[in-house]
Each structure stands twice: as C-alpha cells, then as structure tokens.
Amino acid sequence: MLVSIITVAFNSEQTIRKTIESVLNQTYPDIEYIIVDGASKDNTVDIIKEYEPQFEGRMKWISEPDKGLYDAMNKGIRMATGDVVGILNSDDLFMDNRVLADIVAAFDKQTDAVFGNLYFVDQENVEQIVRVWKGSPYKSFKSGWHPAHPTFYVRREVYKKYGVFDTTFDVSADFELMLRFIEKHQIRTKYFDRYMVRMRMGGESTGSIKNIIRGNKNIFRAFRKNEISVSLFYPIQRLLPKVIDRIGFMMGFRKINK
Image (tube, rainbow, N blue to C red; front, side, top):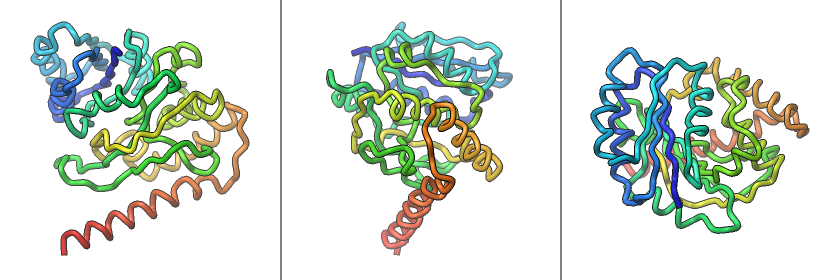
C-alpha cells in the first residue's frame, strides 16, 4: 500500500526540519512525500532541497503562491498517487517511527479511513504536552464528536469520489471535509487507539479566540451545506468534552509531577 504524506509549508524554516525528519525516519518504506510550499521567503525551500536526496525519489515538491492552507492541501491531494493520503503540516511531527506502519496495518478492505489520537505540544518544546486529544469510534457529528484531522488517513479514491477541501471554509475546511465524508456519505471508518502526531499549538483553528469563534460559525455553515440539522447548543456539545479532557489531563499532570 502506497501512502502519500502531504506537508503544506509557508515560511516554515523554524519547524519543517523536524517534520521532514519524522517522515524520513518512518520504518514503513512505501511512501510518497509531497511538500507544497507557498513561495516561502525564508530558508524553507533550501531545507526541502537539503533533504530531497535522502528520500531517494520518494519526495516531490512545489513552491508557488497559493490561496491559503486548504488550497495548498488540495494541490497536494491532486499530486498524490498513493492508495492512502494523510496530511502532516510543517509544524507537526509523527509520534514515533512506526506510526505509518501501524496505520497501514489498521487498514483492511472494509476500511476507507483510519484516525486516532493526538498530542498538542508546546511551540518551542515538542516534548511538552499541552493537551491530549483522545479519539473514539464513530459517533454522530451532531453530538460534538469528530476525528482529529491530523490523524485522519483516507483512501485517495474517497477524495476522487466526494471532493477535496472547500476553501470557502478557511479555518474549518477540515471539519467540513470530514463531516461530508463520514456523516453525509457514510464512508467506513476505523478508530485506531494510538497516538499518531505531535501538533504544535497555534494552528489555523486553535491560534486565537477570534479564530475559534469564526470556526464555530463556519461549522454551522458546514452542517447547512451538507443538509444536516444540528442544535444551536452544538458549540457547547463540541467544546465541553475538550474542556473536560483538558482539566483531566492537567490534574493527571499535577499528580504525576507532585
């Protein structure tokens, strides 16, 4: 099974080296690594060129202006030739060197997508866990459930059948895509109880209160677009489990560090 990993980058010289190395160090060999750079003005492209020979033909990349994060992701998806597609952004990294091998092992003929668990980590120190996203098997999106997008690995044929990211959703296009795939079109998913990615805090949807509010507005629009009714209390249903998880993590962290 060929796995296409897409990394979107823009002025990412401070973080992309660790991202690339986490892909390069994977024990699973059958990968295609795609980097879509948005015409960075720093040393991002030089770093990409530095690592390209180490992939021995398994890397392809472009550097050109784009219309934002999700437009760049769409470019990567269209470049992909793998059986399965996953996205690892330029400030994220795999949890360990067996992540892809374990994801591939989780796929079977009855599975269209696999997802798992996620650590949010400090911007400067990726060993410092700030928050835990513990996934769970499928529940209705209307209950506040959805997968952590950085752990969402999907068969490429699903993108071909149901489309790519809707770029009009800016900070919430990943939510809309998963809603469309899982809730509307009922693709066959499998929850894999494994921590897959370390994600630095401060992304498009988590970087500010303003973006969180804008994201919730877009989420309501995503439900409308896909003709799925949802309660006005949905933002509370969605955010409350995350708050509880955060409190539980902090209490556990304090116990460990007493």
